Image 1 (tube, rainbow, N blue to C red):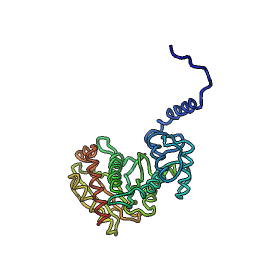
Image 2 (cartoon, rainbow, N blue to C red):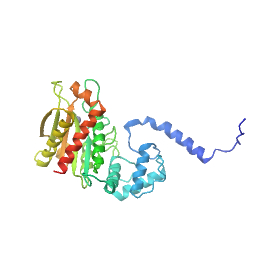
Image 3 (spheres, helix red, strand yellow):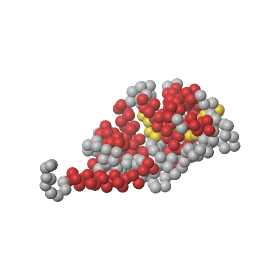
Length: 300
Ligand SMILES: [Zn+2]
């Protein structure tokens, strides 16, 4: 027989645990669509946030993956010091600023000190093009962008993404954000060297069309060089046909101030491209090509 347990009031630990369980039960409703971190959230991404705050010289309490009041206070102190909106919510802008800050002190490699903004096309309620087989452009663009980010960071670059998950950029500022304006605002932060927008093309008239295209800002020789280099490198690393590089009348190209390219990698209307884009190894190959192109362009 085990020891009899004395009947006492629940300890604070038990109450905290019960509160946590309630929070855990409530959170999954928000699912992947709400990657913003705020009071009451928990998990690996909260721990990552806490680590970044510690590295930046703020005190979020223990790095335990629980977004409690101390983590919120540290987030607000950081936002205040960085000149951001002080709301205690870690959205893309706060993440980007934290990563820039920690990257500055950690970076090493051929891209050391370079800041690159990667813009995964679409997101949240905007799926982008949808293939005949149900694949969404927004998923492929995020998958590729996340991999490019890693390759660039491995070379010492500081990488800021316009979105880190399946949501609209800017949704931490407004429930109905102007997502294009948000993408451009993030890109036009101080010290950004290069803007890379990632999309997948669609050409319903001819499902046989496949390949890579690059778009650049009209009148910008640098952007043209960037788009050409990226298209050539992706074609090299993936075997996709290099179709063309053209001026693109796109908002994100016309309203950013640094060399900028919008890459259309494969076609959502082509079965072969879609079946490749579904594969992790293929997304890696695309990402390697883009990262090589960025390095060649910046170190030209
Ligand atoms: Zn697109």
